[in-house]
Length: 241
Image (spheres, rainbow, N blue to C red):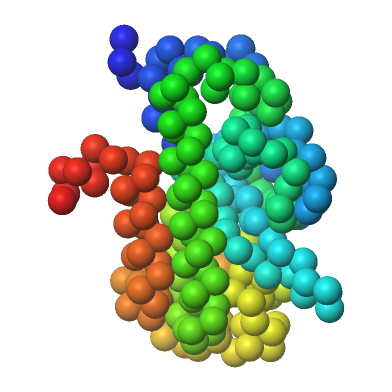
């Protein structure tokens, strides 16, 4: 049997049936509550998280108190992939950006399962590399592109990961997402709303024109999507090549 049971999480649904069975007895359900901190930087990660709904934000805390998002993980992937293969000490803080649900597994159990299966180890490496690719692109994007294009990119990515056109995000959260000041975020959100790309009111965002946001976004949105397709869906990538 080559196909795994269906799952709302992309990592689990991509596994072979044998690999899924290595994990299945150890999976537990968990709520991803708003602003819930999953691990702080320099702490040992104890559990991996596989979102089914909701989005996890990886955040760097700077000395002056700023918080800058470097990557997001949603229903397509896993938080803790590289930790299961090596050092469990977190390199950044992980916090729930969009609330939802997740499957969780103790990191020790995931590590033991990976030790038994080369294909599971390969899956973990690919998902870890996909997050790393996103981190690299985010660094370049925040250094080079406008606040407007960065916000459009992050809203599109959040939509993809959460599976919904309706998102709850505070101005502070959006500022962290794009490494900008809150007043800049407010001005740009109003601009996107005036263009009828989004409807924004008191932290509630509804994306009303996806094509408009894509045109406003920089190339980083498409670049990250292409990297994820290559790493997480190699058969699709090979067919399209």
